[in-house]
Image 1 (cartoon, protein in one colour):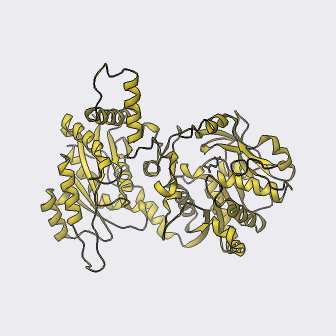
Image 2 (cartoon, rainbow, N blue to C red):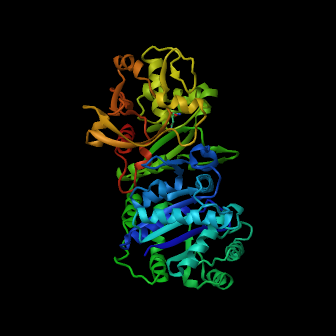
Length: 540
Ligand code: GLN
């Protein structure tokens, strides 16, 4: 029998519901069960691929090519296994499936209604994910917070599953307890309201995870227990932590795993030693710093800086740095600044390594190219991810291979040197405006060339990495670049597409057409990030 743990949010978003879900999943797996996690996003977008990262954070691409939510990245990193497209749904996707089924007469002439047909489709998808991964436990994280209009049909689906099999479903509420500066006291009322709201949907939380800046004390635990109708032992304190990888350790300390198992009448198959403690100790021992600049554009929202847009990149930098006994200091460098302030680029000399991550469109492109030129000329380790690889090729074409005004046709369709050009199979998609889920997506193979940084890093000639792009190095112009010294160190064996570029006579100058950050795991740092960090530490 598969057990389902619904994780819902209270009070506000962004308090670590995804990390809580991933941590619980990891802890149950650590106790000897097979666990998977499903993310539900209540918006109309069919997937996360069409959203600006500033709106929604990073688009995480799965092995099987789904453009999904960053929480799937958290699940993969915490569970140390791949999560596939069955484990993700949005309201748009659910409705699309139901409407397509209706159009195909699959409802046998019935009136198709929001309830029960939409929740039924949600349940079908959850159970499919369970079946595909043969899971003992499925964590189902419902995005947003209870009380949001968009959430209701998912809570209804959860309620229907609970009715169907009460012993197989529990609810975890991850809620926030503010400590207002002027009061200096932790307040429980917003969480009480969140529980009431959940109650009005016919649901009672079995466990409350109390997120706050500080630990929950006894008086407040009592209060929550009485007002939220839940035994105090099932209220778990979850104060802010330095590293997200401490969360499972804290949960284990609060005996959360055992409490969850008890709810289902189950026992642990293994003891509670988690691998996370070792990692945290390793981080604590790391003393040297490595200073990395990320030159991008998806981080400003008004007065605030968003790091969610590049979350996998940040995680990958951390994993590799920790493995090398270093603590990364990561700075956000706005590409636009390098365009408007000509001298700003000199500030890059203060970095041990520079990354230009993925991106789309022309905003900030010339600034990124300036940063890449600086890194190349001043021998600062450079790692280009997808757009960062394409723009490094453009910079090399312009400044080394003498191709004046070389560009990507994404930016300038009339460039005399279309160094980066649209993939042939993408031309139709663009002209027909078929833009959702239609890029070159997911895992593709790449063959590595002898005597290259790439081959040395991976230590094997055939690799596979995840992609998300429409443009590609133009094979017609490759010769000229190669003659000028650009090395194509990784190629797709089927289509002969350039997957990796690199330079000689530079401590580390590597660009990849794929997104290696998506496959980096805390216990298994990505080989190219490792080489990059090693080079950065050497520069230091
Ligand atoms: N905009 C580029 C393309 O579509 C790069 C995409 C990316 O960085 N993910 O090919």
